[in-house]
Length: 204
Image (cartoon, rainbow, N blue to C red; front, side, top):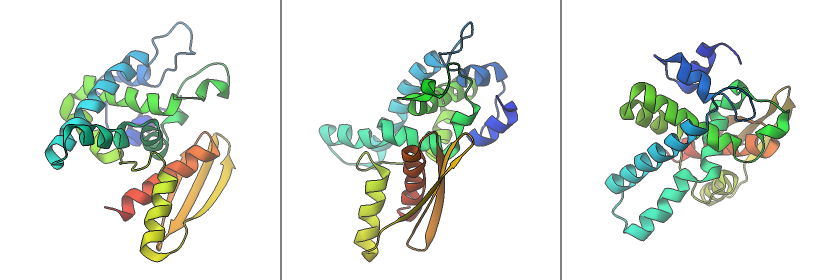
């Protein structure tokens, strides 16, 4: 794992308890050490409370509508895109090769980061982290959301340039005179991350 300070810079948060940071970036595949699974469990609850409260305050929607709106923030795609924009997977300690990073690794890691920040700095610190890093994914797919938005605005298509790097993929997407970069352990994840960043920027 790189220096803890590098992970803190990626998170935008400085830990008082570096042990929590270490656990946050320890995958369950690492034998003999506490993994981030418990932090993930905690972070999931904190995340749901934050999003639920945000929607309650910001939206006049009914209960059923609020439930659907919440899915746009807490979906696997939305959390994976948030993780990829931060590039957290590169700090993850794991065993067994890249096969260990498949499935819900990215979204779980984001939840673990929320849990770690919550334990270290409290609810306000966790909320600040989520406010800075989490974006709504209107369709469960940022590429689709971006495409629909760009087509509605100027009848054009986003342009993606994706290439392999040593530890994964990096993608640059351009649309409406703006561009954004995303990274991920797969081409799809990198493109979703880039699309999520640009979509959030264009719709702010």
